[in-house]
Image 1 (cartoon, helix red, strand yellow):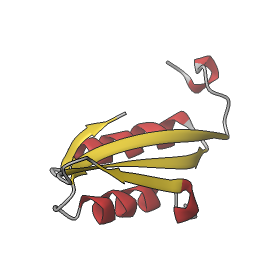
Image 2 (tube, rainbow, N blue to C red; image 1 turned 45 degrees about the vertical axis):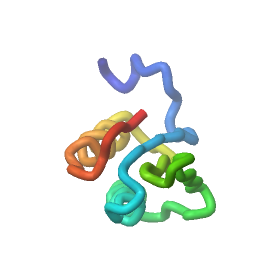
Image 3 (cartoon, rainbow, N blue to C red; image 1 turned 180 degrees about the horizontal axis):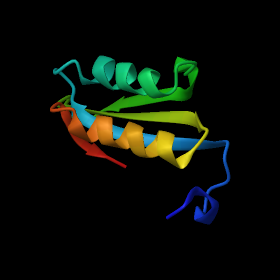
Image 4 (tube, one colour; image 1 turned 90 degrees about the vertical axis):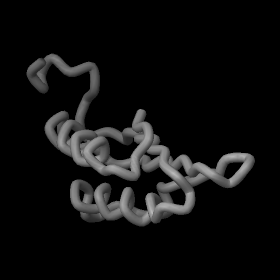
Length: 88
């Protein structure tokens, strides 16, 4: 799909939810990956929640997406991270 055919209009705010083990350093790794693709990412736009038993953490990053390519590259790098269990 070409960017001109995308349902999104860029730039736009775009939430990305990533989940991993709470004790693996996942939050720091995920933030590093996001900042590689969105250098000016503001951590005020990052929200995390730990599971009831404290085993897992979900993090929502609301980024200012500038292109489909940027989103695709970010998703590819996040899903390549061994500590990542799920990304939405």
